[in-house]
Image (cartoon, rainbow over all chains, first blue to last red; front, side):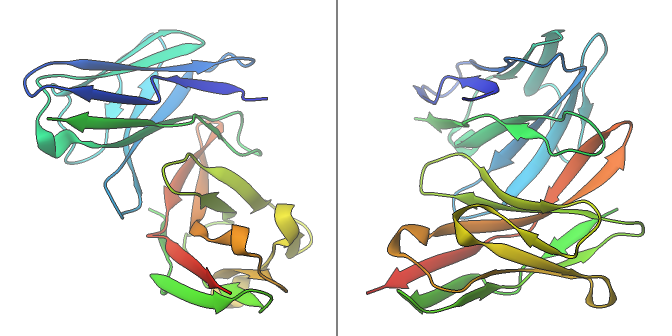
Length: 115
Length: 115
């Protein structure tokens, strides 16, 4: 079964509103989680590294005030898209790394549509 | 920083034919390499991974990949393609840092299977 649960799977919101996406590690305490974004017909780009107990680390070009990341506990990270615009419409997916010598586990992804 | 190149954006093969998807990586140290598959509107599924040892790696669904250090390649192969293999395939390289894998994805190859 899934070891990373991401919620919601899809969401439609109006421009200007905020949307929160949750990523839960079901069987592993994760001090670090990753958030990726995938625009239509493009690859997955790392947005930020979520760090439990400290601030997230954002990749170059990602607005930290727009994409708020909170690593509330060792099993939960949230990504909040604030003041959403249509250009924020994308597929957002989280991953939970499980160690240096094993692969990370990915959530199911969240398809966000801003209208 | 690591990077991944997938030279083929789109590939069409006949059902039952063999398949090879190309992947080249750039990384200064020993890479950790992955192939993921993404069906339309879905999340990522890990097909196979290479961390060390035998350079020919077997994965799920009959896929295999061969790590060639001299060519910086990790090509994915399948001897006989099934219609259900139609999807997008991503090669990825992981950099072991801070005790976990930070993954960079290639641009993806979309596979179309024709009867």
